[in-house]
Amino acid sequence: MVKFLDLGSQYRSIRSDIDAAISRTIEASSFIGGPDLRAFEPAFAAFQQSANCIGVGNGTDAIEIAIEALDLPPGSEIIVPANSFIASSEAVTRSGHRVVFCEHDPQTYTIDSADVARRITPRTAAIIAVHLYGQPCDMDALRALADQHGLRIIEDGAQAHGAEYRGRRVGAIGDIGTFSFYPGKNLGAYGDGGAIVTDNAALARRCRMIANHGRIAKYDHEFEGRNSRLDGMQAAILNAKLPQLNGWIERRNAVARRYLAELADVPDLVLPVTAPAVRHAYHLFVVRHPRRDALQAHLRERDVETGIHYPIALPDLDAYRAYRTPQTPTLASTTAATLLSLPMGEHLEDGDVDAVIAAVKSFGA
Ligand SMILES: *Cc1c(COP(=O)(O)O)cnc(C)c1O
Image (tube, rainbow, N blue to C red; front, side, top):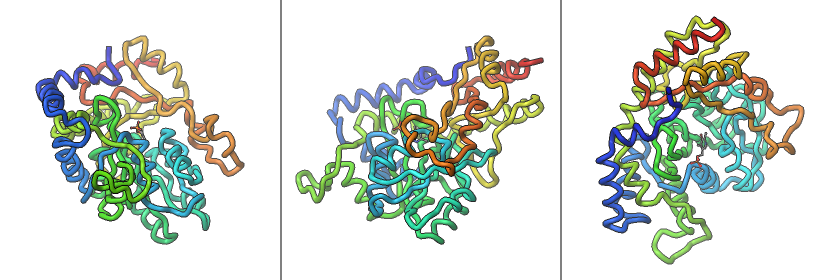
């Protein structure tokens, strides 16, 4: 069986570090805050090449808190790619703003900056740059639009820890960046977790206060915030995993290179394209095939697990029924039925990759 995700094998490869981290947290009763959180925040800031990091409860809260900290006019329009996970748009609505969906680039699957340009109105205040599947967005193009129209850029890096755009790690390229440590992400906790990074110290301070009941010290609440914290146990686990992350991303890239080289000639199979000057984090390796369901069934029969990211484009979800207009993006809707995510991760051995390649090649042969 070639697994799509194998958190058990990752645990077995670093078991003593993880077990020590968990017992240390319990021994010290450092469940909220504590030394591991204090160590993790600067370590993750350094990893993402950002001046500040704030641990929060999960990746969705991270986006919501980042938007709130930007203090945009209520009811602002925020542009979000139609091809993403619902968290990217949910955080916009939850913080009192309006989602405006836009198209993605059909080759890289990240936000289509030309389409973003067409959707900017006087009410537009920000863009959510989702580094989807682990590939950085075209940040230069988005920065040019943001500068021209006075917009803020929030990077949704939930799938892109360690990814780089022109040699710079994602997160603090825009105004503020958010990450998820959901267990299946490239850097995953053993429960929920998230982080916000930014080079802007005032913005960082505001995020930290929002996430912790509007306070810095114990009972001096300057405003109402909320409770969204990265807990001590998760921080300890993330500290144990962070030194491995670069190696894991390199392994993902090695697997991707083999898929790209050895599946290049498979009829009707459309492989993903890596933009120039990026380091892709390959959270997911997403291909397209006109007979996706048959290909997925064929792989399942050969013991190869796959996924679909995402089966329904955001504008087609019931949650967004009321948003649909003749201008609603269509590309994510028309391609959703062709998307297939092949197994990807540091858990894959060379033999697993061989098996995936052979199984894909034998489809329709
Ligand atoms: C996983 C994910 C999130 C949300 O993260 P959670 O920690 O699950 O809340 C946000 N955006 C994208 C693109 C994601 O993949």
